[in-house]
Amino acid sequence: MTSRKEDYSKWYNEIVVKADLAENSSVRGCMVIKPYGYAIWEKMQAELDRMFKSTGHQNAYFPLFVPKSLFEAEEKNAEGFAKECAIVTHYRLKNDKANKGKLIVDPEAKLEEELIVRPTSEAIIWNTFKNWIQSYRDLPILINQWANVVRWEMRTRLFLRTSEFLWQEGHTAHSTEKEAIFEAKQMNDIYAEFSEKYMAMPVIKGNKSESERFAGALDTYCIEALMQDGKALQAGTSHYLGQNFAKAFNVKYANKEGKLDYVWATSWGVSTRLIGALIMTHSDDKGLILPPKLAPIQVVIIPVYKGEEEFKSVSEVAVKIKNEIESKGLSVKFDDSDNFKPGFKFNEYELKGVPIRIVVGSRDLKNNIVELSRRDTLVKSSIKLQEVSKVVDETLLDIQKCLYDKALVFRNKNITKVDSFSEFQDILDNKGGFISAHWDGTAQTEETIKMKTKASIRCIPHNNIKENGVCVYSGKPSFQRVLFAKAY
Image (cartoon, rainbow, N blue to C red; front, side):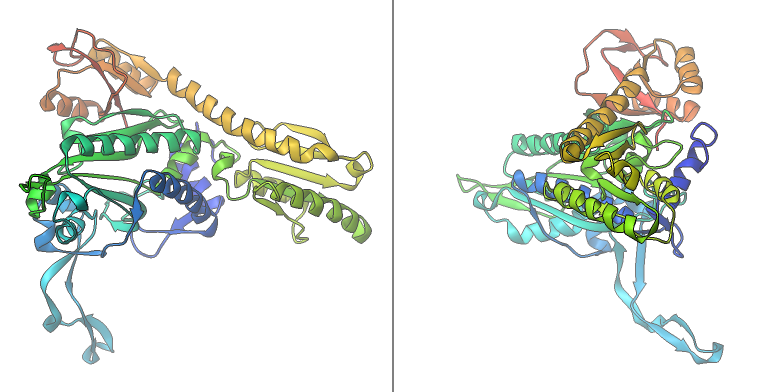
């Protein structure tokens, strides 16, 4: 395994492939998510789905294809995604017999209207909402869909940036501006709670600058995380869309007084990029480290024995331990396969980030103990047989907490306040992380800093303290600091 310090990008790619999470496909820029990687996504999906439904949202599904005229209806949204769109122009192939039977596009099968393969679903959903909304009694509409989207990326990296990816996208309609803003903030809070409670990944909640907002949004709320290489990663966003989409698609409702008004909108989403965030937040040079709450296998039991008789006695105890731990709702694998030696299995499950490994050996059983090893610290300990289930519970909780605490300490150590542009450049080049600096609030200064340093404004933190200062680049007055960083 390549060291993180030696080559972070190569280290990341090796973990994704060697831990059997995903691989590149024959389609440029697209990936195959393998069963172990998809199992992590399913765990994420299950928790997020529960959190969405607890706040009144329902799942639905909308078409993959968006007629070009609908896509163009909201100009800012269409302009923002135009360069990433894949477009369907024909609906049939035909056999070219003159060219050895190869299939070619049938020029007579051109679509009357081109179809956009969705990069996001606001257009098709708001055109549908128009049929669902007549009066205030129909509101709010709180919809989420689990789907795939296509954004034709030129430079791709497994999970972090691919031409097709899986995600969820929420789309809601409200009768008041206040209600829509509350919804957008609430969903950003849910993303933050999920990131910290389940991913053990500390995040900073904030607003995007105007130039970094979602195309077509009046405001974008975000959660930003810091990876081990000092780069930021946008882990989730929630958008207050105002009445832009309602006006573009003529979605009105009759209020209690019978007057017609445009509805207010939000949209919000997270994607399989979260798996990339999980890898880069916790993993080490031995491979993946997974927080217990999202690990497909939380405990693996490996027998160590010589001969058939020892295997029978060891297996009997291992199965008993497995059943006891599983009865508490934990996922356990008893790896009794005989095609690999124990040492190989130890390395394999370390690489896959399984939080706890229990070794049941014939020698230890004579003393009524087993060996328990933590993936996060690699610390081994001898546990009495009658205490295994209790210790496993306690250890999983401790691993979850320790992973979060470690990531939080790292994040906080890598937020640096600077007051001059020379300091800004020095920290960016030699330390990395988040740079807390004054900004004059202009798009021109923001773009200049980005061009000169490749660092962008990641967010304007919600917990910002108002303070008078001068912009780190222009020297113009500023009343608050924002967070800059290089980012994925």
